[in-house]
Every structure is written in structure tokens, then in C-alpha cells.
Amino acid sequence: MSAHAPHLQLASPRLRFPRVLTRGAVARRVTELAVRPMPVRLRYPDGTVVGAGGPDSPVLEVVRPDALYRRLEEHPKIGLGEAYMAGDWRAAEGTDLAQALMPFAARMGELVPKPLLSLRGLVDRAIPRTQRNTLEGSRSNISAHYDLSNDLFAAFLDPSMSYSSAMFDPAAPLAGQDLHAAQVRKVEAVLDAADVRAGTRLLEIGTGWGELAVRAAARGARVTSVTLSAEQRDLAVSRVAAAGYTDRVEVLLQDYRETTGTFDAVVSVEMIEAVGEEYWEEYFHTIDGLLAPGGAVAIQAILMEHHRLLATKGSFGWIQKYIFPGGLIPSLQAIRDVTHGSTTLRVGRVQAFGVDYAETLRRWRESFTARWADIEPLGFDETFRRMWEFYLAYCEAGFATGYLDVAQIRFSRR
Image (cartoon, rainbow, N blue to C red):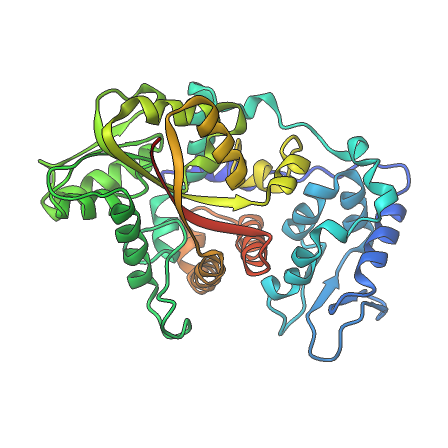
């Protein structure tokens, strides 16, 4: 076992078997109604097939029907992922999991019959108060994911250790492009958006493993970077030192709300998703207060459509339970509303590139699978493997179908 064993044990939780009165009959009926017109095939152990898919369409194998549908009936938003973790269903041999999930992601708003949508309140669970992003809660939420193991992330990320969407060159074929080059392009683009140059006093909210801080320092900026992940901070400090920029970069283990000073530019790459709706106003108000006159802000954010945010923001999902506790994806409208109502910041240029995230996630999942023999000895088990396989494929399907998007957003003072 590695030195991170206590965290790893939390990452592969014991799956509680649900208690339901109908033993999954309702969930099975609803699922089969949804799948019947889809270009997929749902195959049961007895050979029964449901779905409109042809011979070349994705095949989902139901290994344990009773367990799968009882989990789905207990909690539709969590049961599917838990059932995959437990091995109750799987993608058939020759079927890519993300490809199999894409027809569902593309029809997310149509999967449940409208009469049943009115009963959503009976099955939705509120987000636990233990996941609130208070100062202490944020530390716990971030540590639960990012402090798993630096070696885990290094196994499937590119050499920049960038754990956010790459930005591929739209003028070149996607398949032939190098992931590392695309990640560097992303970092340089967000620094350009914030006008980072020699002499810039830059605040980075969410350090990652230090790539952005190093590249900003290479431009001649003086960087203050804050993170709540002790694992990330330690490696980022080492990478900054190895690059020779210790005199220009300070990496602090602290919350953005504890940051003081005045900065010419503020950047934050895919950190707003961890802030939580309750604290969006404080997040942008803090940035506004730290920004010098004439300064610029650039963030990279995962986004969803506003009506989907309104429909789902109060309910507890599989991603929040197992992957990103306390997380919530905003909409562009929500960001505009919050900044307009409580800050002097105004949304300017928005550069969206959601299809690039689908490709980024595909490559991460491919590397994760290929490197599993190196990852498992770090202290991770088969439940964890299936959990992360589902997480990466589930997100890839969301971006590939447009259910999710990602964008770099530049803000300036009104």
C-alpha cells in the first residue's frame, strides 16, 4: 500500500444495497421504455435484447438485472453509476463505454416520461450539508479528490499535469494532434486572455500541479498561486523550483477567500466548479476586490445550459457523491447574473471548445486503462477502476453531445 492508503480507502466506498418495495420493477419498465427507440442494444443474461440499435450499435450488457434496477429505483441519479461500479452492467466486448452513453446524454431531457417528472421530488436527494464549501468544507472536498495520489494523476495526464480541457488546433485534424501541445495551447490562451506579460502581478486560483504558474513566470510575471490540495502544492513547488522560477512564483496552501493583496490579473482554470452556488457571489466579489484598476480576469469553466442548472442544482448526483464532493457546474447566464449583481466585473469574450474536452477525456480514459497495471499497486481496487472508468466516459459523453460545454471567459471592469 502507498502512503496515501487512507484516502484510497475512501475512494472505493462500500456500496449499500438499496431497499425498495417494488424490487426494481418500475425502474426496469421506465428504462426499457427509454431504451426501446434508441440506437443502442440492452442485452440481458437470457438473451433478451431491448433497443433499436443495429448490428454495429453499442451493446450494454445487464449482468445482474435485479441489482441494477433496484439501485436505479432507489436513486435514479446515483444508481446507474453505483451499478457500474458494482459490475451490475457493463459495455459489451467491442463497445466503447462513452459511445454507449452518448445516446443517453443526447436525450437527457427526454429519458423520463413527462408524467413521472412531476414525481422528481420523491426521488431527488438534497446535497448533504457536509459538502458545503465553507472554509473547512472546501478543504475536505478538494482533498477527497485531488489528494488521492500525485502518481495516480501522473499515470494518465500529459507531462504538463494539466487536469482540465486541452485546446486543440481547429485548423488541424484532431486525431493527429499531441495532447501535451494542446494543453500548452490552453494555458497560453488563458494567460493571453488575462493580458499576462512581463511585470504582471498575477493571482492564480487553483494551482493544479503548477504548469500555468511556470508558464506565467516564463513571461516575466510574478505569480501568487493558491490551492487547497497539499499533494498538488508539494509537487507544484518542486516543479517551479526545477524550472528555476522560485523567485517569481509563490504557491500557498490557502483558500481564495483568505488571499490578500492587489493583482493586475487573476486567472482560474476549472476551479469555479468546486465553489458551489452558495459561494459564487463571494468568489467573484473576492476576485473583484483583489483586482487592480485596469486589471483583467480570465477563467476556464465547465458550463451547462441555464435551464438544466435550474432543474438539477439542488439534487445530489453520482459525481458529487463519488468524484467531486461539493461540486456544481454553472451556466454562463448564472455567471453573468452573479457578476453583474455584486461586482464591477463584466463578461467579455467567451471562447467555447466543448468538443475539445470530449477528446481530452477520451485520451485520459485510454491512458488510465492502459496504465492500470501501474495504478493498481498504488492502493486502488477494482471498484475504484470501474468508478473512474465510468466517470471519464460519462463526462466524455456529456461534452461530445453538447450537454456540457467548456469555455475561457474574459472579464473586465465595467
